Length: 402
Image 1 (cartoon, one colour):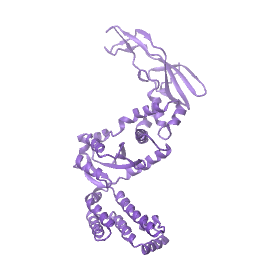
Image 2: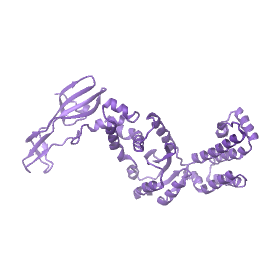
Image 3: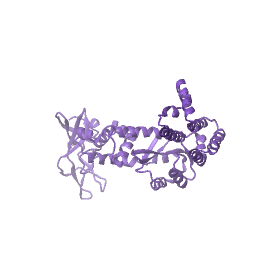
Image 4: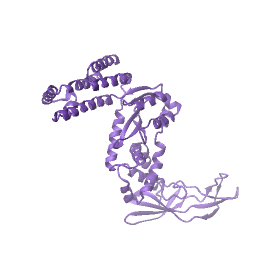
């Protein structure tokens, strides 16, 4: 009698027969014990009442071949409480046609492949793969149990990522521990408020900072639900906003003068410019003086973030705002008003230097998943595959290797 219990992960069974063909391996299993514990009185009995018909279950792959196991479930008679019961098994629950090991292996395959590849490799339909994917991922989305168990202050990151076109989804993560907690199906104030309110009082109390971009939706929601947390505007988005305003002015001047103006020279960091690019930048400023104030403001904001103290940064930001407000350009005045309104939250960056860098990295990973999958039509499937890619190393891989 062969003992493949470790290989198959079927404790309490022994292999009595094995066969194979080109694509599949078949194992016929038999119970090691001749007794079972009554579920009602918890006493062991050895009187077998009858056996069910042979069950057939898919059980992952072995050496590239799909493994199928066969076994019979027995019914026992308890002499103490006079009842007939079915013995318990840890392989699969009632009516299941695949074991948990097989389900997780199929879901693991979806981390970097399409549903079609799963259908071809495991002969599992698209809808079944979606069902199994949801079973594995749903309990981990917006699950803050680890943070509650650790009970240490952490920084919450809230950002947005594009789903398709102008449709944006909100991403939420633990920046301190580099954990993506979940992706919301929309960028909606009501949904975000509902999510933050669903957090336990313990989790709310240990959120020390919340890093956001310059979005009123996020600001008002966080201040309402998490009033004790410090709000920080991510410095990446401040510079990104400056580059966006600079580029809008560049395109406007291009349309007016009907001449191309190179974007990368204007948006590139000053210290990274080559000597010939510096000359080209000076030539642009000479012919288009309207761009000079935009470019100088962008560089002054970058210089502000290099300040060693919050007081030094505050003084530099004050000078930037006053310079913008004293111009006669309506767009520059609006820019100055925006910086003035977000001034407190921009300067909060210098308290702990918290950024949304981890969230931006996750967004790059999310974009890669979209390219591999050739886009998504269903938001739920998109979010599940994103969460799967995050959980694959922390949840599924250790279980598959064990």
